[in-house]
Image (cartoon, rainbow, N blue to C red; front, side):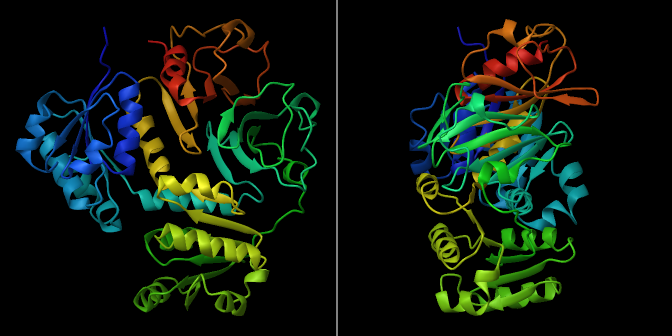
Amino acid sequence: MKVISLRIIIIGAGEVGAELAAKLSREDNDVTVIDKSMAPLDRLASLDVLTIQGNGADLETLEAASIRDTDLLVAVTQVDEINIMACLLAKNNGAKRTIARIRHTAYGSEYKSLTNERLGIDITINPEQVAAQEIVKVVKSVHASEIDFFCKDRVQMLGMRLGPESPLVGKKLKDLSLGDNTLVAAINRKNQLIIPRGGDALELGDHMYMLALTANHFPYELVSGKEPLRVNKIMIMGAGKVGRHVVRLLGRSRGREIKLIDSNLDKCREAADLFPEALVLYGNGTDQEFLRQEGIENTDVFVAVSGNDEVNILSALLAKKLGVKKAIVEINRSDYALLVDTLDIDTAIRPRYLTAGTILKLVRKGKIESVMILGEDQAEVIEISVGQGASVEGKTLKELALPGGILVGAIVRGNKAIIPRGSDQVVQQDKVVLFCLPELSQHATTLFSGR
């Protein structure tokens, strides 16, 4: 008999809503998805979820979804006002918690007190801001394609693709000299993710995911085989919400030259007023002559966030061909994500997975601090506190005999962080960073969280 963990309503069956529905239903939650259109609901037919066609901001529709017995309502449509109204109605009709995806900055800043206190929204998430924060981390992280921090920044996760320059190609993991404070936790090889063993050899094109202690210098040059990259000149294509967030965040760093380009003259004028510290240019990121005139060959990082996946991909490929050292693109369509991984593009930012990961850590039971989704939902990195009565408590990693799809990558006890070996134990209140396959994430959470 299926034991229901939470009763959850998701408003909006788009990319983020569908990803949440898939993950949360797989974890024995009672999930209902509401959307005004039938087509996106039909795409959820293979999932164990109830679908309702209707307006999520309509009380009659919410009552049909049993709103009065709902533990959590997540509103992730493209329309802020619908998300806000859905949360307001839900909270006033019995829903215990609400989360709203809100894209307009005014709702999340100037009206924050109104949103939280009077509109029934417990947590707001701005996907463009989340994407921009991820982009800025990657911009600053030398040769890494992904980077995230766990356990109050004591542990870092880095993604790096092995090119022909890397001296690690062809070597077995057990023969690597990365030091005791670095662990190769997973490898994405031809869109298949594996958690490797010591006898596995690295191949050209492998996308490595590594955990390292932040206090130690990470050997970027040893892994990549490339010279150190100092990021001084940045070109951002797209003066929309994501591009503006990126400029705002990067503008706090002195000594950087930031160029923001867009093919919409009105957006350029608005951005020029907002960001006097940046050079705002009216032009096309897929125009070879324009890019050359603006010194693309001397640019360190090119960021493509136009809002159009095709334009982002084409402009990034052109920038790389013309000599830019690192190219970052925003990708929203899932069918393009696998293509990007085969191209000469350093990093693909996937906003739907960033947003889903942020929501998952708020939804899942247990003492989860953070969730990061890797690739096209191929694996998860979870930071979790070991709870009282957890079945792993007091045992060495060797004694745990975890399934092959779960790996303990780091342990933080008090102020001390380690990359563990088989003889290391986990004890109550440890912070643990786990790599796990999606189908084992709930099992991993149960093992480590305890009562």
